[in-house]
Image 1: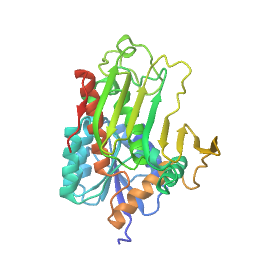
Image 2: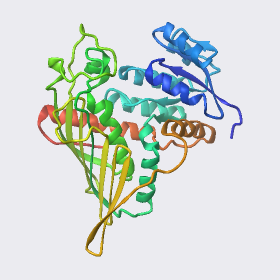
Image 3: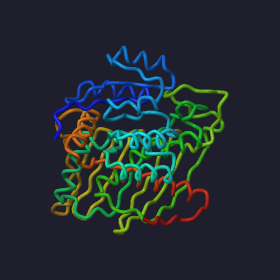
Image 4: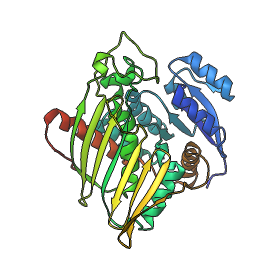
Length: 354
């Protein structure tokens, strides 16, 4: 086990990169040693704000820096695969923002590069690390829900299309709309809480009823009115697992979802009990003495989700162990997302071969 600090390079100085910088500054055994961004003035600004000693002129220059042990990749989706693969080839450990890639083919290329490199690749799915999700996972692992046979999850924003016309709303750059943006979070957390069952078939539909009309615009991102919108603004799917369990997924950036919460949600239904997370509220439901009994799930104490995620990444590097949010989990998510888009186009169920 190494006692030397892990020297980090940050690729991407935008909003999510700034979150990682703020977090890793507080993580023991980690030093942010360098940063880069395609817009160098922003990288230089972040370097000043976070006291980062070195600004590289390009991602390639940072990846070729022999003093860097690991990189955090927080850039538009289309660049995830090429940067992650090159980082692994250069012998760097990688913390990769979601989604893993714009499609399953690129995600698989990352997995192959990770296996060949022997380095740590971890997906930055911070929702796994919330106090509520960790408490929920404990209940599942203790067998309190029994066999989980059905789950429902989603995140239905009513008016929240980000950065209209920018990379967010272009399929060639983002890979998709809310399904690949926020749906991947709910898919990832649901599969994790269900015990990572193997998905074998997918039936889904996507819709674009607001974005093409420049409706449903939210506050995140910067619009580019000279750009375009060719992704969905709502997606729905049913995913069947090898063990017979099912997961339904509903996500939107914009929808006339009357009476429905805009909070992310997961409902797990097991043979012995059920559980739900809706925003920051957790509930466990059982039947006792012919009565329905609902109790609150209390979040586990500890650091906030991003801090725990970051510490786990460093721990995996130092102890040479596989991350909880592994490369394979990222690939599984990408395969399911691909299948939903394929099913929507064909109108047919899509079988997943592994």
